Image (cartoon, rainbow, N blue to C red; front, side, top):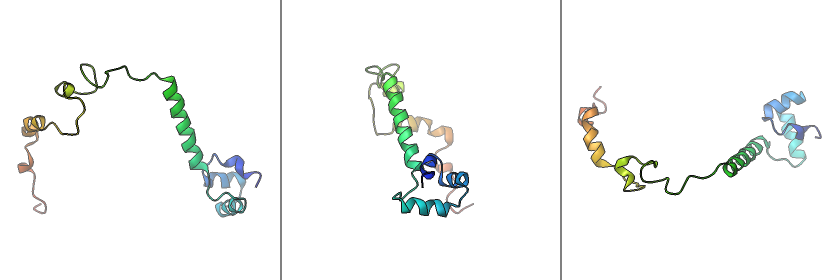
Amino acid sequence: FADVPRHFDLPLTQAAERLNVCVTLVKRVCRENGVSRWPYRKLQSRKKKERIAREAAATPGPPQGAMSGAGGCFPPFMASQGPSLHTPWPMMAANAGAWGGLATWPAMGTQ
């Protein structure tokens, strides 16, 4: 079992190949030693979370007011409204002619 933990950073199949044994044997040895699941994915998840936390700490946040107004992430027609869960229906109605509307779509099963 002493050789197995050195390969926890690899997928189970690759670890078994490097140890020159079958996957079943690696699983059996792990279970006999209290490792119920191969830890590769858990380790990858932790590494990713740590990397994201380091990057977030090193990167300054957005400036105040960056979410609205000129230069914000909202289009000009919504800048005064701020974030909304509602679709801008007047814009969709104005653009409806561009794709012909639902009336031009074929009915289901008539093809």
